[in-house]
Length: 180
Image (cartoon, rainbow, N blue to C red; front, side, top):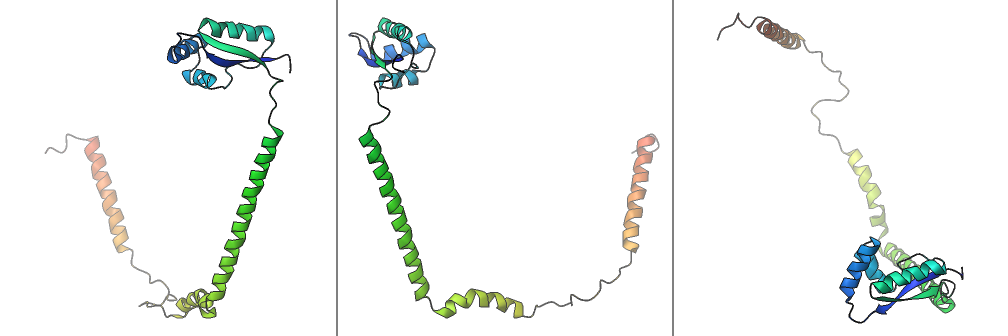
């Protein structure tokens, strides 16, 4: 990977404004101005490439008034060993804090359970039994069979509906019979 290079932003040429350089580069590369702004802030705009292609990219930037430098991708260490150990240490500290907080919460919960009288601990179970012992206030017994009702009303409603459908069919078939 040492033969791959990346073009990095160094600065702007004299007389070049940041906004105009940003707009011109975005138009030339047909990309968003946000990516160009990120390039100005130190993030790479181009992918690592061979030296010839990286030089062409640098010339393009120079023609727009943007100073750049070539940086070999093998030069940058992926991460500082001391920074990695500091990051790991912070993660372990956070995990230790979370664990100790959970232990404290569990101790507080046990303490609260010990403070409650025993009859209050059993009260939810007792309350659930009490409602079952109460007599239900129903006027009719649930065991009685359903009384058979006469179907005269049902038959009369069906007959009325059929009669109205017949009248509607006659009206639609012979509209001249009924004159309103």
